[in-house]
Image (cartoon, rainbow, N blue to C red; front, side):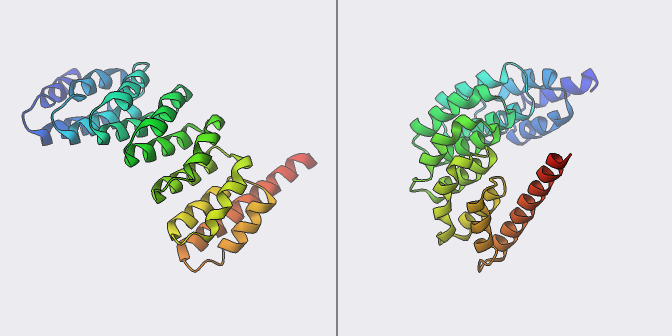
Amino acid sequence: MPLFNLETIATQLESENSRDRMLALVSLRDVPAEEAVPLIKKVLTDESLQVRSMAVFALGIKPTPECLPLLAQLLGSDTDYGVRAAAAGALGYLGDRQAFEPLVRAFYEDTEWLVRFSAAVALGNLQDPRAQTVLVEALDSEDVVIQQAAIAAIGEIRALDAVEAILKFAQSEDWLTRQRLAEALGHLPSPKSVAALRYLAKDNHPQVRAAATFSLERLEGERERLESENRE
């Protein structure tokens, strides 16, 4: 991007109008991370919560070596739970397993459900098997959305040992929970997974049935691929 455009964005980030500052952040999407991050940092303490949250999210999709420690600090200390939740989500986008410990700490210590939800989702995005213990404990949360995040994340990290723990949600009254279960089981090849998916494929909600059917096809395709490789 030409230098004058970067200068224009930098000027726009200092506008008194929060909409201008948000548009400036959007304009950084095509700017290389090394050039974008110094500009993003200008508004990490912005007076507008929307601007701050956008800036935090931007750090997750413009990775440089300083993004992870910046996000970890925001996750652990920002006074606004929305910003902390955004920081957790951004750490998941980074995909760096060094984010594991700050995310686990946030899940256990933060009192806001949105932050804990974002931390659980991000742990799944990291695809770090160490998250299994945390995610299985999250299944006992009183918040349905955290249960859903944990189920999905267990699928993401392919925690086969946790299949038994998530199967109890096949009888959940919440159809979205059953859908998340069907999606997760598609990443967890086992006889119990297949049996549960066949049950969910007859669910009374069309989205649950669709997810279960897709997961069954996924597992069957994976089984056939492995058999073909073994024959070779």
